[in-house]
Amino acid sequence: MNQKSVSGGLGINGRRTVSYIVLAIVSFLCLFWFYVLFINCTRSHSELTKGFTILPSTHALENLYNIFHGSLPVIQGMINSLIIAASCAVLTTYFSAMTAYAIHAYDFKLKKFMFTFILLIMTIPTQCNALGFIKLVDRMGMDDTFWPLIIPSIAAPVTFFYIKQYMDSALPLSLVEAARIDGSGEFRTFNSIVLPLLKPAIAVQAIFSFVGSWNNYFTPALILHTNEKKTLPILLAQLRGADFLKFDMGQVYMMIAFSIFPVILVYLLLSKHIVQGVALGGVKG
Image 1: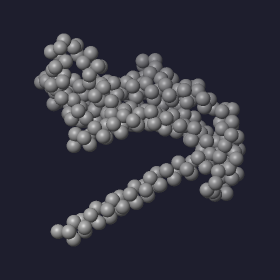
Image 2 (image 1 turned 30 degrees about the vertical axis):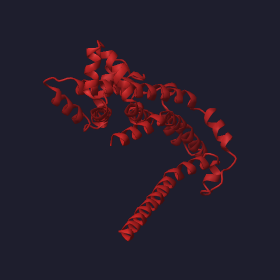
Image 3 (image 1 turned 60 degrees about the horizontal axis):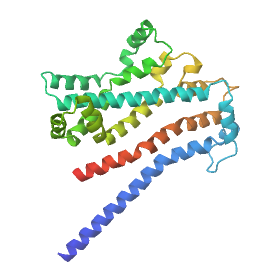
Image 4 (image 1 turned 60 degrees about the vertical axis):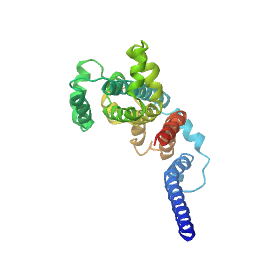
């Protein structure tokens, strides 16, 4: 028995060591490309053509000055991206949570059909309805505005499905019934009781929604035409598509680095709720 227990202990320690090694390798591979990005954004175009170096160069401020004082409105593009991404994150999480709450807390005839129908919408690619969407936007007079990029985020089947699955394990119906007995209205119950319980799930989906909207190039490129209304991905594509005489790879790398800072900031602000959600799931397990 003692030998078996010792061998079992060694086996556990060995598996733990292998897990740490694998995690270290994966973490290195994930972070290495960020390191390459930040090194390259400190180099000039001529230095980048010579190949990669481990140490940073001295052209970071020059590249930053060039993207801010170039022909493209980078600051306005960041403001536009922030407005669209933040609005989409708020609307997506709130209305998806409200839809999931309706499916979770109410019983009606078409409940299973509605749930299945919403999931079926997930299988339709955005590109399939792009032409009809553009025609609809043009007829409604919303072309070259932010509204066609913000309003459709209210309907987000993927976010709804994730929050619904989380709600099944974290929101007992007895809590909702107790609130109703105490005289709480449905909106008050949802905003004061349900939403605080869904903070971890909402934080995760807010990050996904923010990043997805922030990096979205396809739909904004079809809707936005004025430089002052374009988002950062469109301006970055224009910068990369400049002619040979105006092309500067150092500016491209600096603009890419500049564009990911808000995403990192949003993740740092919401990571506490993500960790709480993982810990809550572990306690329930």
